[in-house]
Amino acid sequence: MNWLDSDLARRNTAVRKGLSVLFKSVRVLLRYFDIGMQKGPPIIVNSVPKSGTHLLMQLARSLPNVRYFGSFIAQQPSLTLEMRSQSKIDKLIQKMIPGEVVGAHLHFSEQTSRRIRQSGALHLLIIRDPAEIIMSESHYLAHMNPYHKISAEYKGLNSQQAINLTISGSTRFPDLFPKFEDRVLPYLGWLDDDSTIVVRFEDVMSDDRIDGTLHRIVDAWRAKFKLTELCSDTIVSDLREAIVPSKSHTFSGRKKEELHYLDKDQILIVERMSSLMGYGKV
Image (cartoon, rainbow, N blue to C red):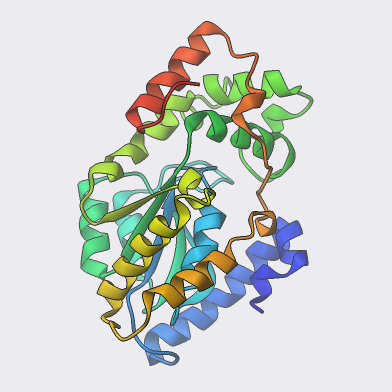
């Protein structure tokens, strides 16, 4: 078992981040000395925050011939929320090693898209119903990540107040944590990017739609890896078994049905984002 999957690492953010730093040293050695398993493309697991990042990571890490060191490319690291420059993003993409699974919250830009294509990486993006993103993000910032730049602003808020803050954005740091739609819009360019495999959280969680989604992921991975002799059905079966939402350290299980107290303006915001992301009404 990877130490990053241990109960202690899942429960303790400091332990998890410490292990990630340690594993980065191993990653550097592998990069320079080319030690390890069969070469293959890196896999970038990108997401709109709180859309199912760890769910898609479980799937990507269950593909054959991959390795994981806890690396994550964040456009805005949660500790500071300072926007990373394009040159910094380019360098982080360049540091990926063959077969590595890397998590990400990456805004769309033509330059980032080009860098990902040049790296040969398989780029997966998971999206989710915006109403459920709001529910998940509110719970996460209020109760699950005390190291996040904005978490102190959620302290002492009830559920409705936390949701209002998630939609309207921070009053203390409006440039770092703007209103909900301004936080999501920078990701939506990926929906039209030909080299991105877009996955819906709801499809992965649906018994009726999951197999089609998993086959799309596996077929894209096989095309990148050029391992046509591997059986897609067998890999899809392995990926199905890998889905355990409760093993995510950020899983909350909150549902949009709890958003019964949105006002008219908030509903309009959520419905606009739902339309842009291809979802229905609240």
